[in-house]
Length: 227
Image 1: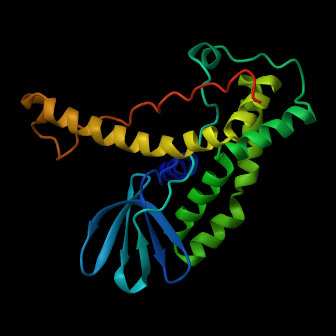
Image 2 (image 1 turned 90 degrees about the vertical axis):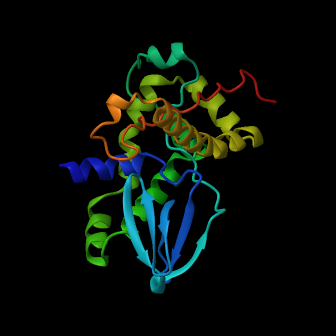
Image 3 (image 1 turned 45 degrees about the vertical axis):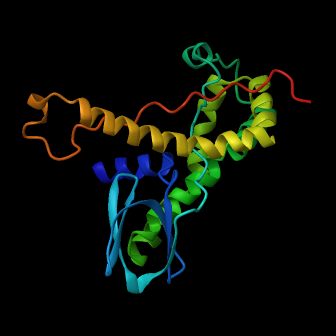
């Protein structure tokens, strides 16, 4: 059960924010934060799990690869709209379904989920990866998320978001959020380590006092009108 929970969280969370990409000679890639590197191997943190790749299987490492777009089922336009879901009036119309699919694309959810899935598969044996690829489908998961978008957004909301996140400013925001999140985690961890009372540190492993990742920066609502 824990393995399936981890797999789900890994798929839904953009773990590649501000990270390095390891290109393997097999053609697979792995994106995450390199936590150890020596003359024999590289250890990379992928969504909280560490994976070791040996130098003879690595083609190259790109430390400046752009971060994958963040995954978010419902980017909060405001505290009020996030706390008060829309009450669907009936079955989801085809027009609204199409808007949800467009939003999934412009916000980067689909691409990020697929990238995270492929990243997870690259850490498994070919046999295990083949079985999981036959068992799971990113497209099916996205389809299951449609009622969630329908619950929180109206068609006018979605149309505005599609316009904004498809614009130059919107694309820049989507690409920047992962780097801000990663930086926030690192800064918060250092702060808690520095200010943790000694009595709380006793018996704790190094860095165990680091907090859970902070809430992602609020995503501003799309402008009411886009020209």
